Image (cartoon, rainbow, N blue to C red; front, top):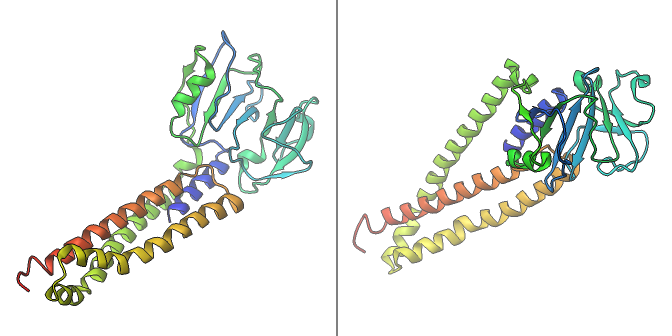
Length: 289
């Protein structure tokens, strides 16, 4: 379900011209110092003043791109010549002659990408006569730190521009709300079932306690045979899911696996605490042997 939330965000990015809702939009009138590449993953777009559908694009790192059908084999992340990716609705004659079209956006449901031209230069150099509007986005959380490293103390003007686009559609907003409510409901059901599941061991706990086992010994035994097998099964499944997802259907951000690990860890901690509570209630709280 967490993966579904991030997958839906990726689809929204594609329909929004592959611009994330958290993108930073800024203008830069002149360059006093050379711009620097960062070690982080990012996409930086320079929008043409004459044609907003034409964008100069720089990638850094193995950042996830929208689906592209390539006409020629190329390393789009490290081009050794000027290349272009265009939408299916674009007239190829609108592409500057010094750029080679190497592929098309394979996004039939994205009107924006099907109408856009991405020009990918072979160097990290900027021509401000083209336009001074830039859009920056990264899958990392420290986006402001990254952008300040890139601009290298050059003066910029952060502007408030609507990057949300399709994210604001009522159908999308309601769908995201439904997913989040479903996730919370699933967690609540899991917590309830987990407590009932552990409470069924009360007779086992009482028998062990009456036979001289301490509370801590019973707690450890219950963890060993009741909880640890599920933990050992789930961890490899999470790792397999990460590898398969990255190989088959990469998303813009891998934070879904981080969130899954946080959720899994929280639920395991809840079961550990519940297990201790069940053991305590059926031993010390009821008193005697």
